[in-house]
Image (cartoon, rainbow, N blue to C red; front, side, top):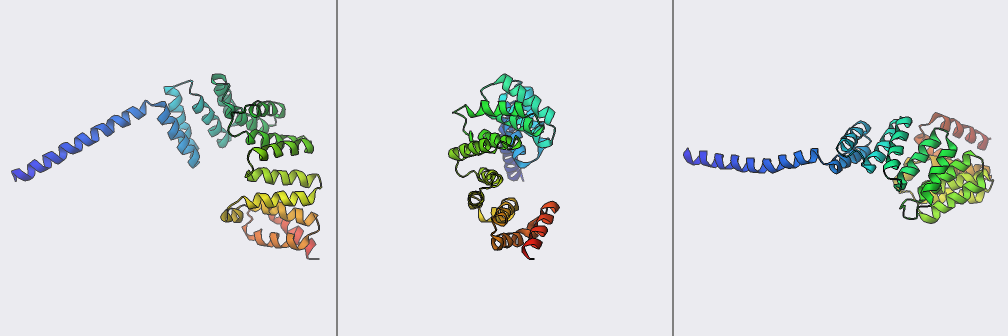
Length: 258
């Protein structure tokens, strides 16, 4: 019995010594702004906005001028739909670190969503001149979107092509280019852009992304290639959840089947 008790005592001691360093790590993490920030990013990527905001705010409590945490909070609040609060955090981030170009681009997207077109354009232009910005295709893409709202299609085409020069596999840029070309009545070129967008999706992604396929079918229809349009409309019909899109497909198919 004494022998067994000794073993139990030794095991218990080893557990204490194992747990103690772990507790120290946990305590250290509570006061580590970088750890709290990374936890916030994890939950942001998971789509858990509430938890993301909680950890990002803890990070800022520990380090009030933490530019990355401020920028991420701006993104979190924009995802939540609180655009005013999102703007506040992006502005605070830029005040702390004006060279964090990502914040300028994000701020531009929020301004654009709120209809503040001039402010959005200003932020995008700040972003595109930073040659060190690793995602410069994004502000170019956003400028193209912005110029479509201004009905300046040639300028929009220039910006989306700049985005594609930087990142040729930018699926949504190919789709946007197709949309611009379609509006310019350059239908064969629009069809080519939509096909390029689809080619850059994985096979399972093509099944899920009905929007690009719908755009391609409409372009085929406008270009009088009715059989190709019909094939795509019928193929995506059951996967379409948007009732307005479904109604449009019904109307296109009725015209084709006359």
